[in-house]
Image 1 (cartoon, rainbow, N blue to C red):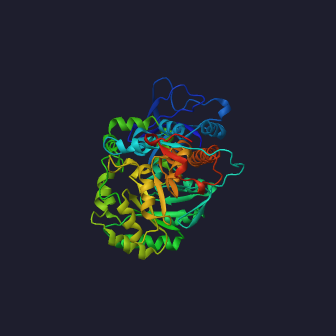
Image 2 (cartoon, helix red, strand yellow; image 1 turned 90 degrees about the horizontal axis):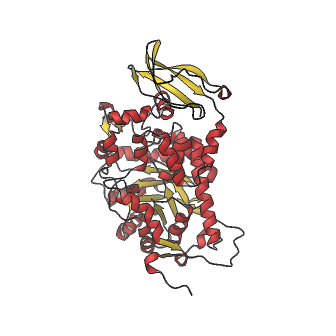
Image 3 (cartoon, rainbow, N blue to C red; image 1 turned 180 degrees about the vertical axis):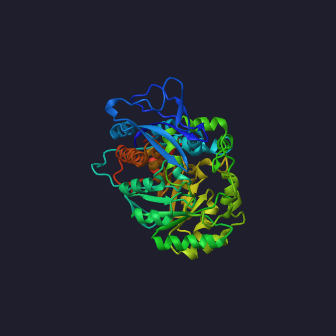
Length: 469
């Protein structure tokens, strides 16, 4: 995507600054009034880029408002080189933080209350040590598995994430295309910004739809029928959102539908025009799968927390799970399971698997880290059902640890969103490539030639070390 130096007129208010990273020294503002402009600072939007970048001024118009921009068509390879300098998910996170306005980054990065569970989800993996086998033939390492009844190239799936278009204009389709190249399951959120039918048409790989039990059961039944008609392979029922978590970063920034931002937040948007311009002039932001049925969205600005709390049913129970399992009659995972009894009841109620999850630390702060629950949940449900570790994955070695404890696969959200924000589809691809390489390297170094052979003998907690014989 071209880098952009842009100043936009919106009710005569400057809301954007951008600079070509190769030729601009500072990003400065130009206040535009009609056809005249007043320069603020030491440069203006009409300053030319370096000749080698083929920069030039162009105009745009949206909803009767106009502005000017200098677009720098620098070599797209520059962006790719930046992505390839990312050595891990943490590097992609830093790139995303640099590219996104602070409120948008905080929506990806933040959690509930004091963010104890958010941090613990990640740090809990460091409590487990990998115990390698030696002198095994690891000249070829097999990573394939089956998830939601579908083959997967390795035991990873892309978790459902809402409002994905906020992070990049290509939204869920960019993520799905990257998932297809890597041969893994992609899960589309009910709160996504791409219609499930459009996603299914563009993505031939294994796909799951994340669903809620709405107060309007007819809407839930409609989703089941739409998913069946579109060729989705499984459903994931989220059950840990009777109300929205207290996400204080979002409250401080005023993030809402549509955004109702503070002055500080607006300035952050102004400093990130490479995000702001496509967001304002690109495809309409829409909760594509629910907006046709939820009248509340048309009544004015509503915080994300109030929106979620107002639409989801606090009375949902096990009979609703049984009803959904009958309606769908296919692979179904319950997302948000944390206890042994709930895992057992999920399977008894007709689910074929469970996603051990605390919603990425975004709901009940203080809930256990998913990795700490995996072994006990596997023991509770036996060897048949899918057990998916959802949350805290930042390295391929984390996946190996979860599998050794009994998980069928792991599920990631933030890692691929960091990649998406950093570089669109190529950024997602980079995130998945890094994790895949780390996973395969971990198996090789652990002396394991088949991911299915990982067992509890390959992992131990730091508190329960035993002398190696």
